[in-house]
Amino acid sequence: MLVLGDAHASEPAREETLLALYRTLEPDRVLQLGDLERYDLPAPTWFVAGNNEDFDVIDALRTGEEPPGTENVHLLASTAATIDGLRVAGLSGNFAPTKYERSRDELEGDRRRHFTHEDVERATALEDIDVFLTHEAPTDLLSYGYDPGCEHIDDLLAELSPDLCLVGHHHRHRESEIGETRVVSLAPAWERYYTLEPETLALEAHDHELSAADD
Image (tube, rainbow, N blue to C red):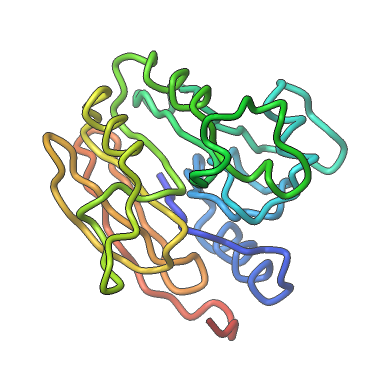
């Protein structure tokens, strides 16, 4: 199974990198960690929304619609799917303290990029999760001289206890063990791709040079 970090495919060079990965690797199934920004893809792709998306498209996908220009994309927004025998769930969006206690239907424009307490509560009710996808990081994973992690993600991991949590947004590879969960922050798709073995949950990183896209 192919696993990809942030794509930022609204930028032409990064869109070409994304499509080159699909063409070259010919995956049957793909997991993607947000900031996708392209919603018609060559293979079935399950993703969480990031903070850079077309939020009209994301809103439509949240309600189960298939708007024009979408193909092979499945949004995990406090929902779960069974993929190659794995129970995969995801929390879409990133955290903003001033928006967290609001209802999702109160968020407008670009503020739709955030998750709310309602989203977290729905995700908490999920069961038997093997792999959890999130755009926002838990605490004790990354450091910029401060910890950018979100305690709401900590709470979800404690409640769901997935074997593996995959994190986008930060554009760097980091790994940690948090409770019973292996947590991996992914490098962006223009630097690396990852492969996941469903039976063992072994995750392997692969550097590539499929595009001249610059960070």
